[in-house]
Each structure stands twice: as C-alpha cells, then as structure tokens.
Image 1: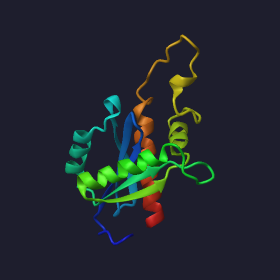
Image 2 (image 1 turned 90 degrees about the vertical axis):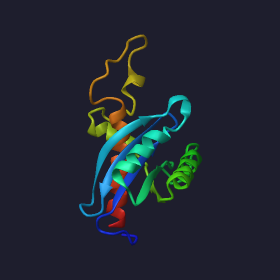
Image 3 (image 1 turned 135 degrees about the vertical axis):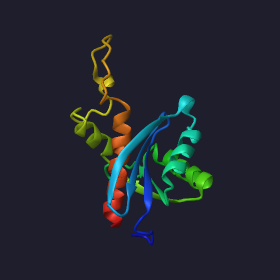
Image 4 (image 1 turned 180 degrees about the horizontal axis):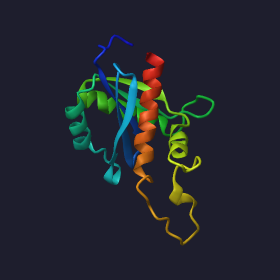
Length: 157
C-alpha cells in the first residue's frame, strides 16, 4: 500500500459545499468506519472541525471522493472537490488521494433504507414536512465517506 506503515490511519472525505462526511480507516485492519458529518455554514469549510479530527486521529493521508459522471468524465462539482483537496494538503501537509465516488451516495442511501434516494426530504409531497429520524440526513454523508475510504483501502491493498 503506497509505502504507508502497517499501523497507518487514513481519513476519507465526501465533500459538498454544505457538508462534509468523514470516515476513518486503518491499514492494519483494512476497514473504514463512518465518523461524522461537518456542516459548512454559508458554504465555508469547517476547518476547526477538521482540525479536531486530524488532531484526534493523526492520519498519514486523506482520501477524497472524486465525483465523476457515469462515463468517468469530470462533472460540474469535480473542480470544487479538487480545490478542497488542495486546501486540505495546504492546511495539513498530508498526502491527498482521490477515489472515484460514483454511486457512493446512492449506495449509502440504499444501506440506510432509502432505496437509492439520496435526499428523502426531496421526494416528500408538496407542503408536507418529512419527519427526520436518527438514520436520516447526515448519516448518508459519513457512510458515503466510509464507502469511498473502504474502496480506496481495498484498491490499494
């Protein structure tokens, strides 16, 4: 695995302008787990939240989900994610690796019981408020981050 020690820890990120799902994984076990979702008020990255997570987990590298079209081409949000990756590198001086994130949010939604709907509130009847439950909302983002990181761990072995 890319010359990282067996005891290495990695963080995975599912980035969007409004929130960032984060997962943690270890090379020793080869597994990733959902960690948290940080909100980005007014589309400003919650650097203090990321600082706390970096300080707590001491990762050797950061894995960022890269949004691509189903044909593998870059899309509208791809550039924003690459900018976020460069900012992570600048702030923490850690290796940044990108991992194709096609279908991770859909898979996370399915695993949480939403049958592929990435935003259950989007599909409610007009004027009817969807009641949030414990599994709804931000869990999708951190589970998507877990799937991104797990895919990277599996691929880099």
